[in-house]
Every structure is written in C-alpha cells, then in structure tokens.
Length: 233
Image (tube, rainbow, N blue to C red; front, side):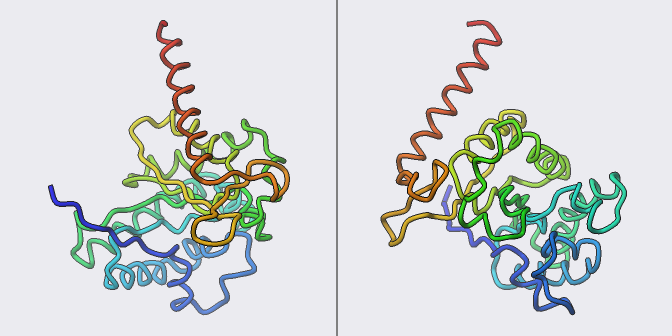
C-alpha cells in the first residue's frame, strides 16, 4: 500500500477566529465555549479546513472539561458530557458536507492540564509537579472516555510541557486498549536539534527528546509486564 503524507489541521481556534463575533482569548474554555455559543461557526471553520486540504480534524476540546462547561457555561453535568459528543458530530457533519467521508479522520484533542489554568503554563511546565500521577489520571480520564465513546478515530494530546504528564497518559491509554494516540510537546530547548522536554521542577531539569522517548518505551514495557503478571506470570 502506498503511504502518503497527511496534512493535519491547526487547532481549530485559529480558523474559528475568522467566524465568530467576539475574542476567543480571555475565557477559561477558550475556543471550546463556541460548541455551546456558536456551533454553526465551528462547522464553517471545519469546512474551510477541509477545503484547504486537511486530512485530520481536531475536535474543539483542547481546553475543555465537563466540569468547566458546568462552571462557566451553566450546563448540567449531562449536557456537559454531551458536548464532547457534539464536538465529534460537528466534525462528522463537516466531512459529510464536503463529501470527504473516508478521506478525513477525526482526532480527539486534549490539552495539558496546565492549559486548563488559562495562564500559559502549558508552555512553561511550571505546575507539572503540583499534580500527582493519580491526579493526572483522574483529571484526564473523563475527557478521554467522552471522546473515545463519541467515535473519534484517535486521540491527540497537545502541547504537553513535561514528561511526567505524558507518562501518566501512556498509563491511562492502557484503559483504552483499542485507541491510538499521538503526543506532542512544547519544547524547552532552542534550535532544531536541541529539543528538550522538562522532567523536573524547573526548566533546567530536562532531557533531550530522544532520551525522554526511551523513558516512554521503558514505561510502556513495565506496564505490559504488570498486566501479564495480573493474568498470571
């Protein structure tokens, strides 16, 4: 089978800015609030992205959590959970309207927990170690579960500032064995080669990406060993 490069989209907010009548910045839910306020604008943004050649659409959920929709948009818990499904349906509708079914994939977008603070700390990693591994799992799980159950083709964990969160997410994905995902980082180093990922409490505590990737592989092997032992070593 011939392999071809796939053009992914930018996070939808960049395109969405052209279709809404108010600033996107300055709100805890960022662009995700328009899943409630202006779904037509979200649909139009996705259609434009497809027309521009996008092969992957990211759901408008990067800075969204069910709790945030309840707190900041006045939704019930049930309505807030349904919003994640709506984000996928809007992508599906755009694909159908542009007659690209089977050609465009849908990626469930999930930002770092630091992004939920709305203070740019997803780019600094300043608060990475304020979360325990269990807190990472507990706070990401509802978002992952809602998007997986809504039928995304895969997940994308975006702008992670530190390896600790990524390792927790690799563990969380063990609960969803049929789901594929990519993880992207905000780099700590400068230049095209010196790409580093934060591993500690300060920017100076970081490792080159190639070493962090090796850490992930070892973490995955350890999880697999534990799972095998549960079944009987």
